[in-house]
Image (cartoon, rainbow, N blue to C red; front, side):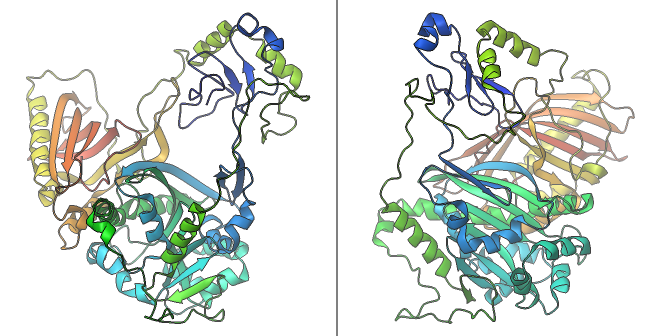
Length: 615
């Protein structure tokens, strides 16, 4: 935030800039945080004698470090080193973030808000294997996995190591390589893993037969690793996701969820792994949908007066006298550090919440205060560490010269940056990661007249479809889709004017083909799709319809605006989604069908607990 009045200086989520200018009063900063200019410095402040620019910086992160490419920030300048904070949990973190020497490729984040306390999701990821057979029965029933994973949860192990813990699955007998192939990793990736994982990490898989699944690191970092089917057949594809739980208040959490994949993996593997992630987790993931339904309900009931009289049972895995139901595994049976328990238990949840309670009792961390403009012998008020190499960091003379640029010059530079010759696209890529199969027909000419029979037919299609979606007649809705349909909803991001894009590269909320859409619909038809049982009340409002001809008579491009209202149960607030759509309709000789839908959501952060319904 600006040193003058606290205005947010960087207002775009993504992009690159050499400097930032506060839009309120024009104070300007380099991208390493140093103040380099302010309007009328001499007239308003008396120049350097009144307010010395040299050494002034935006407030630095009090404590910043990284591990395997993940950047950690602490607001406590006296916090212990990151390596010590993570401790033995680093052993498990490597499984998610160190699959080769090439590092990770990360896409996202998806961002959405849920009406749930942030700790519920963290504790769930940290060790809750007990909920899987009940909460996630529907994804097993529709064949998303090659085996009844819910039942196998009792054979897995939970581990707690220093400040983090997680869950594992028990794999069939085999060597390290055979077990990694079983969960879908190709041989080239297995070879790279064996080159960077320690002997103990490989023993955990190869000798002990356990592979990591979900995990949490205190306070609000969670990770997940799973391997669903993404098409008919027996093959599975693994994926990795990283997320943080950002509390808005005690009743609401903003979730940031990234897809991560080994940078050295093949393009085909990356595409399929991304697909596996979207089907299972994230804003539209089928696992996620039922999880959130539970977490929202727990938060709602916890706010009531009766809940304060109830002492919840958190003793799973303990006998009445406090002894464990099953003793922790020996190092010979589980080669990972920390304490490991086989089967259902709540050891990790108790450890996590005890750690949270201990932190509440700690004295406040020392605060970093900066007296803007005060003098000291070095002329520094708030030192900042920068990662600029010595040959790229500007010299003091360069900094002072740049600082002498007038406010008018900064405005001129801003105008040049926004030159009309630059691309100013407000849209999205026409091809998505999964969209190679998608039809590529484009519009031709101006919109058709409203009385054109083709426009009337397209409008009728959208209205009829809206009524089907309102009634949740999803099997009939699937019949309106072509076999090569592409259903795509990119993640919107805030970018600077003239950036040329406003969607997150390579990340979407939906990026679906006919098979993945059919799996989502099939899940609704089970008896365990809790995210829609009881069903939501839906209303799809479609308006502003424009129709365009294509190069052939069998296709039409149709633009529309949509407002979706969704109400869940009798205690949750209703939720709204506003979006624009571009559809490609195809005539099959009898009727019009949907061949492509691109949905542009009008917010960067989804304020609906999940995207379990279609737009």
